[in-house]
Image 1 (cartoon, rainbow, N blue to C red):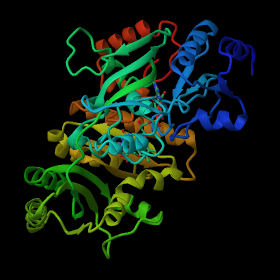
Image 2: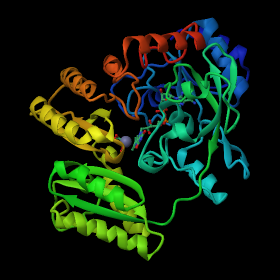
Image 3: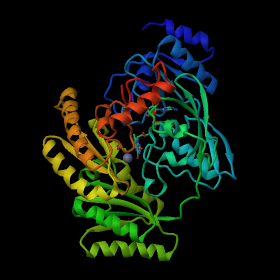
Length: 461
Ligand code: FAD
Ligand code: MLT
Ligand code: ZN
C-alpha cells in the first residue's frame, strides 16, 4: 500500500480517525452482496462536516476515489470498496441534532441508524414511517442515498417523501444546504431530490431534516395463505378497496421454508404455495370487522385458503418474521437479487410473464420470490448452488437479468425499485433509463463531482 496519500490526509486533517487494519479494510470494504473482494486504501471516520469537506478536498488533490459508507446493508454493491478507494464511514456522525414540534422535523446526522430515528420520533409522540428489516443496522445517510423503500411504502411512500432538507458535501467539496425544511420552495431545481437516490455519486449527505408523521392507528396483522400466484393481485384489490392498508407483503413457500429452517414458526399445520403478510387499520370494532369481512370475501372466492390473525404484538412479530426473515435466511447462498418494479396495474400480466421466463431460464437454480407486491415491487432472489462457481453463476444471472430487463422495458418497469443500481445492475441501467436521460445524469454528475472522486464505477461508468 502506498502510504503517502494517507500521510497527506493525516497532515491535512489532524485528529481524523483512520483505520487501516486488514480486518477493518475487509469489514468496511463490503456490503451485503459479499460478491467483491474488499480492497480499500483505508477507512476515514469523520466526526463533523468540516472533516468531511476536508476529506473530499484531499481526495480531489490526491486523485483518490471515495466510497461513502453507512451501515453497509446495501444489496447492490454501492458501498463496496474494491479498488483502493478511501471509505468514508459516517458511523461517528450518528446523533440527533434537533427537533421542532411546530414543523414536526427531526434533524439528524447521516450515520444514525433507522431504528434510532424511529425511537427519537416516538419519544416526541410522532413517527418516522419508513421501515424495513435492516432498521437496526442501516443508516439514514444510506437510506437517502438509495431512496430506500420498505414495508410501509404502500401508505407512506419512499424515503424521498420524508426528507424536508439535507446538507450535501459535493464531490467538489462544496457544502450545499438544500431546502432547509421548507414546505414550499419553488425557486428552481430541487437539488435535494437529485441527492436522494444518487448512491453516493454526487456527494456525501452530512445532515438530514426528516419529516415526522402522526403515529399510524393501531393495526391488525394477518398472514394469508393463497393457492396460486394469479389470485395475489385480486386479494390485494379486495383488501385495498375495503381496508386502510398499512402493509401488503408477499412471499412464497420457498421463502417460508428458508425462514422456518432459521427459527421462524409456522402458524399453520401445513405449508401453502403463496402467502401475504398484511397490516391494516384496526382502531375499533368496525375496522376489525372490515378486516374479517375482506378475509371472508376472498375465502369464498377460493382466493384465500387459510389465515392467521396476530392476537398480540409478539404474535405480530412472529408473522412479520416470516416475511422479513427471508433476506437473512437465504444470505448464505449469496443470492443474485433482482429488485424490479412495474406499475401496480401492470403487475398481474408482468407476474405471469416473469414467472414463465424465469421458470425456463433458471431450471437449475432455486429462485425465491417475495416483495412489496402492493407497490408493484418484486424481489426475485436466485440462490447460488454450492457446486456452481461465482463466475459461472454471475454470468448466468447477468444473462437472465438481461431477459428480465427486456420484459420490464416492455412493461415500462424499472430494474431497481429500491436497492439501487450500484455495481450489480450497472449493465442494465439502459433498460430503465433512455440514452438522453443517462447523458443528462452524466452531466449532473460532472457538475457536482468534476474530478470523479465520488463512488466511481457505481451506477454508471
Ligand atoms: P450502505 O449500504 O452503507 O450504502 C448504500 C449506498 O449509499 C452506497 O452507494 C453508499 O455509497 C451510499 N451512502 C451511504 N451513506 C451515504 C451518505 N451519508 N452520503 C452519500 N451516500 C451514502 N432496502 C429497501 O429499500 N427496502 C427494504 O425493505 C430493505 N430491506 C432490507 C432488509 C435487510 C435484512 C437488508 C440487509 C437490507 C435491506 N434493504 C432494504 C437494503 C438496505 O438496507 C438499504 O439499501 C439501505 O438504505 C442501505 O443503508 P446503509 O446505511 O446500510 O447504506
Ligand atoms: C426486503 O424487502 O426484504 C428487502 O428489500 C431485502 C431483500 O430484498 O432481500
Ligand atoms: Zn424490499
